[in-house]
Length: 249
Image (tube, rainbow, N blue to C red; front, side, top):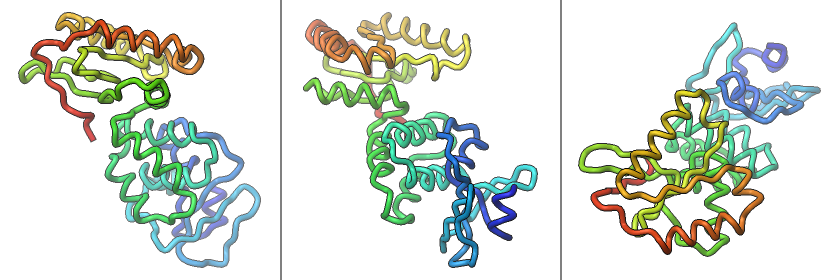
């Protein structure tokens, strides 16, 4: 509230502070980003970073008198100030994974916003367009690419007839192999963990070879993960009657 009072009427909190209010695990920063229209007299001071813009959000969230930007705008504004690639990747993937905004909304913010500071956002959007929905999946994608393995379809929707069998983190259709980047961060309850086990059972019942890797294994046991996937692709066979659709947007 203090930041809005300083920035003046019509100002809107954006960036990491707004994202935390929306329920995302955004990085902690020393400053609160506030959007103000045009070139007003107010300048950044102390913990308030004033962002002058001619493109104020058309819609805002209001809670307890505090005005803050919607998810897509807040993500775009936050990523222009973040320096760590993993932080940007996490924000973009998390916002899409939790359906707090659409890929198309982030792409629109990228296209309409300033070019300066947008490189990491552009890179992250390239990943989510390929189906990446978490940092662990992004790390798995990097590892697969660096290991010279065939590139799978990420977050592939697998169907048997008209019935959705599962959504696989990574899917090699020719070999009938699925890889899952398992992280308790994404399994927020015992019920969701139970659904993960059920998904594994359904895929296995249709002849799919399912591999499970933790984020730590993907980061620190790189050669072992590559070797496991390579062996599975060599041993695998096309799962009968399974149709593949790309990740939902």
